[in-house]
Each structure stands twice: as C-alpha cells, then as structure tokens.
Length: 323
Image 1 (cartoon, rainbow, N blue to C red):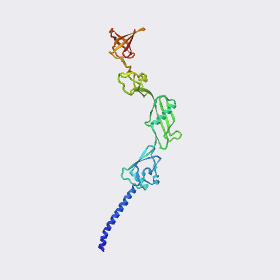
Image 2: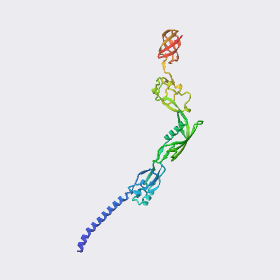
Image 3: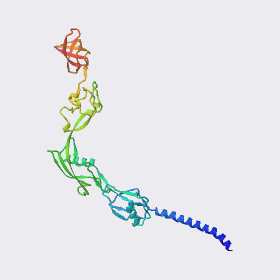
Image 4: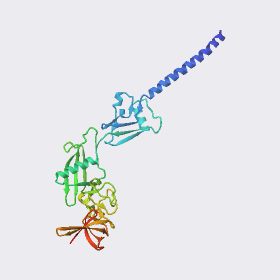
C-alpha cells in the first residue's frame, strides 16, 4: 500500500509542481502588465499654467491625472524630468511605473502664442506713418530678433502704447503691449533707427556689350540712401535702349559710366552721307573712320573725294553733314 502511494505521489507531485509554476508565470505576466499600465509619454505640450500628472503619464485614473505637480514653464519654454524625478512622482502617486533605464525622461513644453519680429516691425512702421513719416524706409532694431511669447489662450495681437521719434537722428522708441494696451499681459520696449531707402533700377539678368537693354531686363531693389551715390542711375528712361560699355552684372546698381547708346555705325562701315545745303539735300557714299552712336559726331571719308569730314550719326549707316 505504501509503495502504491509512493508511485501515485510522484506524478501527483510533478503535476502540482507544474501547476504552481504555471500559476506563478500567469500571475507574474499579469502583474507585469499591471506594472506597465501607466505609460510615460514621449513628450508633452502644456497649455495651462500648471503641470499635472496626466501631462507626464498615460493610462491612469482621471483623479490622478488631474493632480497638480507644480507650475508649468513660461510660454515657449520647456523643462525636462529625468528618471529619478519620474520615479519619485510614480511612487508618490502610487502608479505602477518605474524607470527601466537611467536615461528615461520626458520634455514638457509650454505652448505659446508667438508675436514675431515681422509683426512687431509692421506695427511700429504703422505707428510711425501715423506720426507723418512716409516714403520708403526700413527699421534697424537695437534688439536682435525681438518677440513676445503669450499663453496659447491669449490673442496674438499687439498695440503701440506710445512712440517717440526724433527726425534729427532718426531714432525711435516704442512701447508695445499684447494683446492690447487696455488688457496687456506682456510689454516690450523697443528702440531702433529709421533708415530711409531709395528704389534703384537694376538688371534682372546679365547684359553684355552690344546687347540693348529693354524694360524686361529691369527690376527694382531698395538701397539705404547713404549707399546711393550721385552717379547711380535712378530712372529706367536712362537705361532702356542703352547698351553696357562692358558687362553689367545682374542685381548691381548701374552707374552713368556703365552704359552708353548702342553703336549704329561701326568703324569701316559704308555709310550714306546726307549733305544739307539750305533747302537742298544731296547724298554721297562714305566710309566710317570710327564707331558712333546716334547723335555722335564721328569722322568719315567721302569715297569720291577721299576727303575726311565730320558728320552727325542720324541712324544705322546714315550720317549728315550741314554746310
């Protein structure tokens, strides 16, 4: 009987052992699943003025998610919570989460309404215009890349509260409020200099000697008035129909000496000579001894008399001589 019990006890013990192991694995597996119920977010953007547990972890009860941990960063700024801080939060809130690596972390960024430099400059220019400053000008700011950061729920508008401008040295100082002077939550004092600008015609593409400049070859750029010297061409009427004396680069201001009228008579060309003798006109054949543009005076030689004379260029291959 004892031997029979022993034979029965061995497989029973083995069966019980496997049952215990199986149940242990079962509870270990589901215990691990429970431990992973709270998930660390990869990153988080915060809209309000406080940080909550729900900003850090996913998969937790609402009452725990709403628990406030502390103040949030200023609009547009961020903070990083490392593994040690996260573990302390999880333990304090009784969350089934622990850092798996020492490098575990989360970056919490505060959302923001951004008033950028372009918007600020436009507001200041508008205020300067209201003070009677017109014409073409730009602002040189004494503060690099100014901006205003507001909470996301605040309207992205600004108003100029006051502005002082000195025409003597072109210096201004503006007090800027967001979203308005009356309901200001942010203030910026900005100063700078008003730089008058002059629009200058330039070539949109490189034009070489002998090519005639047309209206399609021209566009405009703005230059500080201090950089516009007396010999820089300011009117398209002085450019159209001209040709470069040498190659003129695109986008560069054009000087008087850079352009000239196209040569309509070339040295060695045969020309028609028009002799104006009062009411009488005679023609003769000649040869150009030098290049000439329209209205230039050049030397030619009459091919019949071989006598050199000076004549006005009146068109392509045609000159005139007045007696």
